[in-house]
Length: 411
Image (cartoon, rainbow, N blue to C red; front, side, top):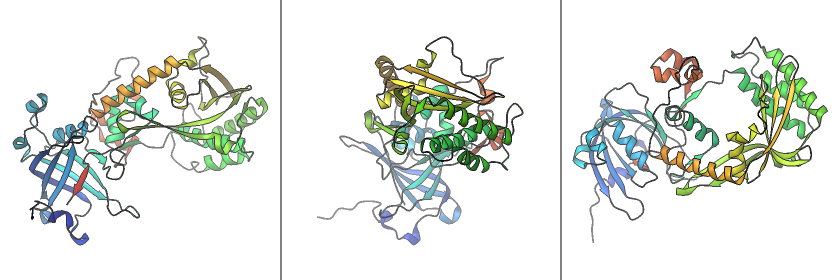
């Protein structure tokens, strides 16, 4: 029996005929719904309109319509300017899809020992609206599984639009804050301390890589001054001798992974698991120029990051070691206990947040309320205001974050 399968020949083109990396203006020629008991999907046939020399070439894609992947279809419809009335009624008309235009960006990644080359795909409205394009990486290999972290959940809860800029559109804050880079160098020095290496030498080596960089220092601080404070903090930490980490190669920067509903994962890196004043607990390092508040008592148990780490590790006792950089350096030692109820609440919070992310709810949470105005310190404010100079100052674009739009792509 012979069966004609339209478009089959297009998937078997030789490598020489493959589309080059680039941005293409395309038109939807056809969209067909395909029922599947577990993973229904739409097959899309896109024709290239521009650049002119590639006009007429065809890209075939697949977008799944499962509850987990529904946000992908939503992004595609919005970015290709689908009828808003139909979208509001949650109706997808295949005839209304035909003729829609959008911009597709394709790049290739060669994976060793794998017969396929997954593509990085981005879509942005063909209408030229002033909104960032969607830059998302295809999950041909991982099957669309998402990996979340505390940072992602925290950024979404603070401002969903900021989450979109960072994790979907590919914008990332530039590494120009001296305090942030010093904190990373100090973490390396602490690791050296517990492994009985020269922690001061490690701090100098790690921090020296930023000596000639154009960094943003606060309160008149300098590179030399921060190095001096770091050495003093390491010496004070050794003198206090209140923290012990056994088997440091195993118990420093410990990775924990937890499976989530709908096939997703949650990952966290804990600074250390050790003992504070003889009590085994989860340890978190912080470097700051301002002392952490100590009143009211028990305030630490409300720290969402520590609750997250307790939730993923199952360890109730948690501690935060705060290294305060000031004229007379100081180290604060905090310890508290996270309850089972708090872990259960955080579990529900993660599930609810991921549902909103997967449903493509990225409305802005403006912090503009004088005199307190969190938006002024947000590195993404330039995108919200449409001011390119601010964007260039604070952000750099790194497309292809670990998300997927087209589940399958052939051309």
